Image (cartoon, rainbow over all chains, first blue to last red; front, side, top):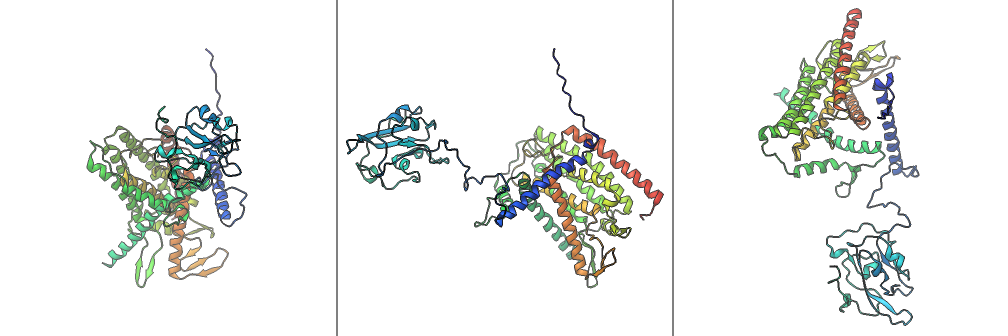
Length: 203
Length: 362
């Protein structure tokens, strides 16, 4: 049976005395303490701001920089006339492994565009953030670059984003009025919206 | 009657200072550890938007603790379970009574010792109080009706008793050199100078005793690197079954003990309220300069000196806490019995021999 003999270094006399080693440790902690104390004070006076006094990121106020490829909350991109770029081709809904996208297309008045989304919903409670919808989109109509990470809601209902929130990442529930340039009349303006969540979420 | 009022005032001053300092410790602990570890530390709690560098977190803690449910486990001895934290806090506070925090204050024709209780055997009294604190610990472990709490209590008691021996013997050296157990007299005796320039503080006459005392005292306060009884998040200690303010009282005891030990170290080894070269009539510098000082200023300087030294000790204890890793239990015991105990005994013997041979100290 192979035996591996691990030879550990014996403690020297000075190390066995404890006290010099404790002083070494105190040297390190005191150095950090006074350095950071000085830097915190200096930062208050706007000096030495290029030297960080702590590695802390004060989260809700400051965010860590995101990688450019980071997949955050979705958004729908706009044309120059502020209508959605989406042509309702259903590719993203089809490719979505979590089936969290619901699109109801309508006929676009412009014959060159063919279709537009009457409704475009993403259930973020179901979404797995794989990014397939972004990759598959032929029109560059959906992106995941809003940098929004703090998604939380009190109900499953509130996790469902409709087209208003997707087009305008700043928008938060509850949405009171529709400011989108749709050829149709939005349900927020009193019309009955086509398509419904009923029967879709219960796959 | 007058004496009673004076004593009450002194006691309230000491209580006020000690309890506030204990509360302040929570803030210092948070911020100091944060600075050492390149963090920012707790800075969120605020009152009306004022955050004061997170100083309100201590208050928030207390409010939280009072708001928590006070649970007494089924089968626990309710009386003892309730009594244990009070025991701890009481003895920690009582230990402050004999610590002199200033020289005699002369108001009119009245002489006031700045010391709550002037006892001839003040040192013994403090050690009695520190030993009795073990009762709070063992009662907490015993009354919880929880095997882990029981074991934790036994561990804590064993540690406290073991280190008390080294602590007591280390102090013996100091007592022999100054020839008194009255802390006020002991501090006064430290006012003399060696060779006209070096104050005859305990650290000068008994450096070995100082190291032993500091180590044993740290163990006595149950703080890192000797925090096996508590081990805040990792070890199940004697107060597992405590919640709410009772738990908070154990915590408070912890900080109070730190302050007791800090002021005791100051008193025994760093000249208590002595300011170097300051005599009751003013400064007498070794290079010949003199600076007369009024009596009230003299007393104030003494109190300030004591407070500053004590605070520095608190700071160093804190710093040690965030520097050293925790001992294993057998290492703890072997350090106490095989390390500190023989060293302190040898120290006492050497001190005795030196005193007999040269005998100049008295």
